[in-house]
Amino acid sequence: MLARRIADELNCRYVSRRRLSDIKDEIDFYYVVEKERVVLRFGNEVLFFHPSMAKVRYINIKKGMGDHLIEALKLEGNELILDATFGLGSEAILMANFLKDGKVVGLEASKHIYTIVKYGFKFYKPKEKWITKALKKIEILNEDFKSFIRKSKDKSFDIVYCDPMFENPIYESDSMNPLRPFAVYDTVDEEDVEEMLRVARKRIVLKSRVGDGLFERIKVDEIIGGKRLIMYGVIEVKG
Ligand SMILES: C[S@@+](CC[C@H](N)C(=O)[O-])C[C@H]1O[C@@H](n2cnc3c(N)ncnc32)[C@H](O)[C@@H]1O
Image (cartoon, rainbow, N blue to C red; front, side):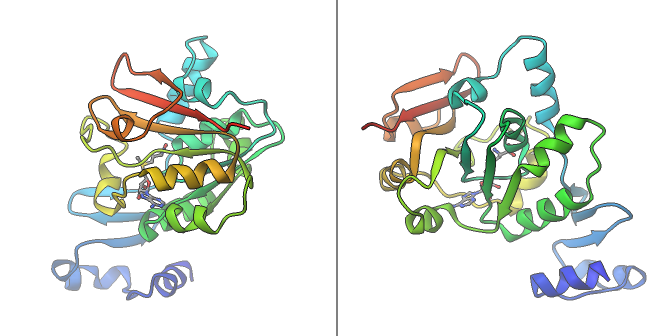
């Protein structure tokens, strides 16, 4: 039974739905295996996998409005991309759509976010063909990017993308809010960037909120976006 399997994987207690009211006051959060999805419930909130902003951004691109991430990645369509901070994978889905032959490997350090996304990918039935295709091009691993990149070989990916949690959160971002309590809040430092540049063949792309200190600490070659709240910094691999 899936609920028992997830409890085993997470090394936590399985409780049947009938007994939930007996223990609800003792726990901070719990997983529920629903008919066609696995969710994480806490307080009045629920975390579950959904492509969220990927759909809106895809439609905007189709309308010719462009997208700063896609612009920053400069894709040819055959890249192997490391998405170092996967979250719910909304941006990974968008980038995978532009990979004819390529692939996205996503890393998520939070075991709870990883678990929700892993089962989300399994059960989510997209109405859109492009999302079905994109999901097939994504592999997710429950790994910390800091150790993963340090053990990765030189030039083992074409592009490394990193979107750490913002220093100044945008609470209006509804899709991110249920993720916040479970997220890892690592920052990116110069040594991480050196490792990313060693691992990447083409470029690295970092995402930051305007007003955060990331691009004061890390020098980038080019900033794309930034007129509003979000910007992408590109560092090209030299030589
Ligand atoms: C801002 S979210 C990424 C959102 C993602 N770009 C999307 O489109 O859904 C950042 C994610 O990175 C994860 N994270 C933070 N530090 C990490 C690390 N060292 N290794 C892997 N994942 C990490 C957080 O847990 C969080 O889920």
